[in-house]
Image (cartoon, rainbow over all chains, first blue to last red; front, side, top):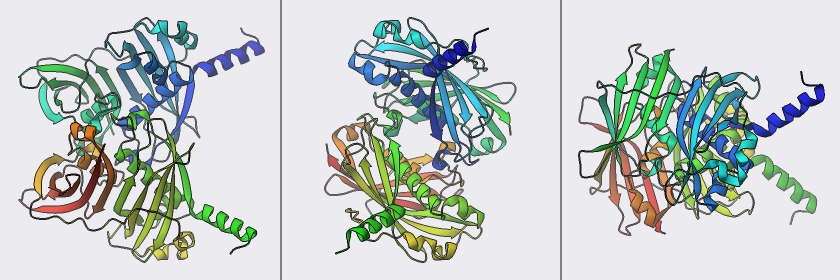
Length: 269
Length: 269
């Protein structure tokens, strides 16, 4: 058992490794149930990831100077409940592990006042060379700086995202063109916008009776402004789980390219 | 000329009257030019208005307890430049005047570090009775509390929004259904979402050559989730100014109801 001094040191080390950022559930970022939209929560998680990596020397701003950038490969969010309007909440984030081409980053969302945990998130990031668009070895950045920040034992009690299977029954449920507001600083469709487009596949009346508990999204390829996206949906047997595939239509052809896959799991409200 | 003591008092009074709130131009809230989206700036202005009125006792949370709420009637934003990614900026906001049924609230957006003014905003708000949906006398709230906070002489050097004229030449340019993510805590389409839908009428290639300098929007009636909205656009003679009318289609009819009117003024970039 570590001595009291050692325990203090361990706590300090963990503090350095885990980032903690405060956010507000802004009223205009809340849905009709007066709780934060999942899309805005997703945005806060991405901000927390950005602040955490920036503060530790391997953030986007630095990476851009050496022709590297982070690419979000997978995001899973599972919420016991969503922060209500005006709640102040922390997003804790830490690196669970880092291998050559992928790193796992986790999140915990908790209320500032009560400490109540609203939910957790998991994400997988790759690094790419912005010139060649090829995967880059993230352990080479600043002599493996990221390895100093690994916290492998902090609990993140939600199951990892897994491959979202799409059967032959998936139905084309929507087609929409990516517009100016969908496109991010890199000229690609913003990761959070996919989540919003997926959640817009469900009617308001669905949300009146159901709460989104878990969302998994796997990013396969990039879409751009002007792309026509198609949404295919397969409804799970429980009536609450949905598998969604997004494709983009290759211009002047019938061909489609898969852009991402998503799982949404609701509970009766 | 006021004495030094009086000048101090005047400064303190102005400080109490003018609210000042800090925001960050978050990277995922920026467009491909790496500057803040107008929609997200609009959201920050609405937040500042909410915080300012909340802090002074006539905010939404209090009003809801007495069956009243603020309704945004008109918003005008004119920007010399947009805050770049990661810029910290202040939104100053103050009440320019308050009459029975309308109050004018202004905004100034300035950089935290340099003090550089990015631009200004003007808005007009009405108060309604949430039960009858009828206009309510805002000077009756807390014995006219709002009147203590009027700052009539702080400069807001942009012209007021005026009626956006629509001629017979306006063309139907888009039709879109309002979805889950468009709807706010009151069950209506979010004021900022109209701005985003309007700006999505212009292609990315337009934004590559033009910068949005000014937007005016007048809210006429409320739209709800599930409503089909139509967008009519009339192009100004300068090739840079556009008048846009949004209508909602009355279900099972050919009738349309006007929801808002908008003016967008671009400059060559």
